[in-house]
Image 1 (tube, one colour):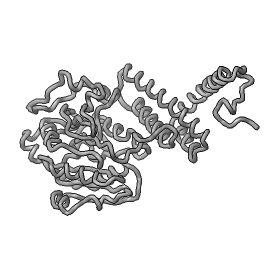
Image 2 (image 1 turned 90 degrees about the horizontal axis):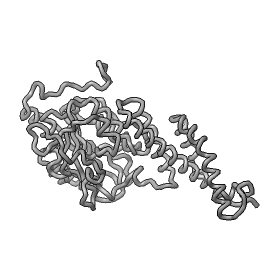
Image 3 (image 1 turned 30 degrees about the horizontal axis):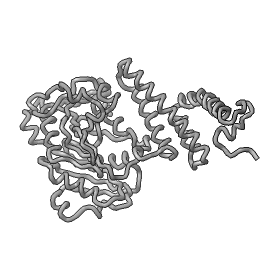
Image 4 (image 1 turned 135 degrees about the vertical axis):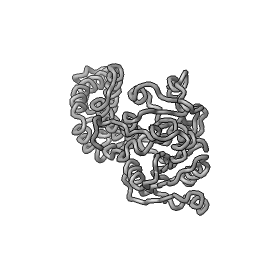
Amino acid sequence: MAASASPHEAAPHPLKDKSGPTYAELLRFGVVIPYFQRQTGLLHRALSSICAQEYPPVQVVVVDDGSPRAAAEEITATLRSALPGLTVIRQANQGVAAARNTALDALGEEVSAVAFLDSDDYWDPAHLRNAVVALSRGADFFFANLCVEGTTTDWFRNLARRDLLDNPSQAPEAPGIMQWAGSVAGLMVVKCPIMTSAVVFRRALMPQVRFPRTLRGAACEDQWVWWELLLRSSAVMYSPEPTVTYGAGGVGLYQHASFGSLRFLVGHADWIRYMCHVLNEYPLSPGERRFLQNRLGEHREAALFSALHLLRRRQKNTLEEIMYLWRDDPVCAASWCVALPKILYTKLRCAFVTTGRRPADADPRRASGAPPAP
């Protein structure tokens, strides 16, 4: 991070020296696509949506992160012809954060704005044009509304983010583009509406931005980055009209992790780390701080129940994940020590109600779900 008076100081916006239309003509988009899929046709669909953009990018970087279905199989001669700036990089599987970082490293110096698109999502033709309008009117950070594939309700309404839809602040000389007038925390803390494939930002805002690889479940590494970009932004604008479709059929990570899987525990560990980071590093109101502390407690409790379930099933690597979580968040270990006696007491009471025996007579092995003693 470059030294400055403030760690979140924004780079000067080009509009201070250039008129809007001139700056719009100078915008050069680079698109970042991490790729790891098993289903045929998803990357082809995403790239086709880029080809259909009313304002095309100058570079598209696809990083094949050791995908079971190679990216090269999805890219036809027609796509290559339509996207002369297409670059495909294949690497050993390292996770979505590493894949995005590889793509960011590969962007050319001519790229002045960065757009993200996950390989199972796709854009409406107006998406980048709307970003041009926003960035040429002073925005450093732009995001769009979206729809989930197979549904009709848009994301902002689904999250009940009425503040983005009811009486929004119209951006100057930018029809259909709204400007966020609240705080960064007001946008990020409760029901964050910003999805990765909907984001475009001015590259000079933070040229060295990279996604944290310490978050292994792909649950919130993007929100970590949004905080850094938003706090540096002189203006944040968005499109309330959906121009992104969130794909429902691709390979997910945390969003497809179910209770009883090790990935479920890893996902909660990621959220715990992220929330601790936000509480320690960013400006929050007392109400926002209380909200995050309550959510943090919920994730710690969910991680505890997940860990107990995995230990009971003797799931491989569970102890390693628990120690990783405790090293990263010692308060979590303390909270578990407080919660465990309550859980054991509840189990013993359930055993008493079920069997009619006093809790002292109940077999704790049976109460915890383990086989009865011989």
